[in-house]
Image (cartoon, rainbow, N blue to C red; front, side, top):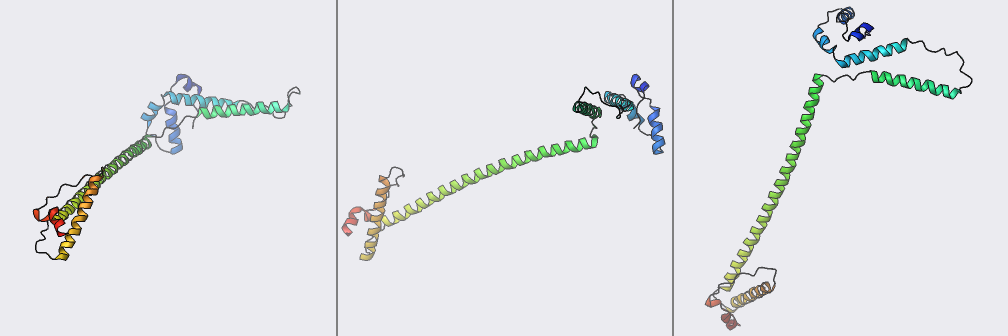
Length: 223
């Protein structure tokens, strides 16, 4: 890269013909981006870079001390070595600070923006999916509870109908074995109802509609 001369640094605007001529000489073709050069060459960052490179070049042109010259006797060797090392570090730090940071460019910036936007979109999509899964689980739980409650109510209704059929069974003309079976079934039903009535946590079963043929007096008469 060509180093800017002192006239260019003082004026603040480099000679626009020199880069074009140098590019044509090195690449053997005409430089086609003079508009970009005219725009970027006036940027403060470009001037700072030129100033840093000029300063670095001047430091390199300074004569280095003669390594064969003896050190003063009053200074210890360790002090001299530390001084040289610190001077070298300071020069290296100044060189590093003098180099500008290269921008990533429009295409890379566009790709980075698209990737960031895609990451945000994926995060939002995953968040919506998690919320949907939670909602589905809640709905499934409610449906399971409703189904279990409905099945329990249906089972209770079927059992009540069975009990009512046993209690309302007309035993007129039945033989002794049939009468004994229904008497035992009726006793079991009555015992269960009494236990349910005595338990406060359970809902008492509805009263059974008994016919005169299945009244307790008839049951006692059969005994």
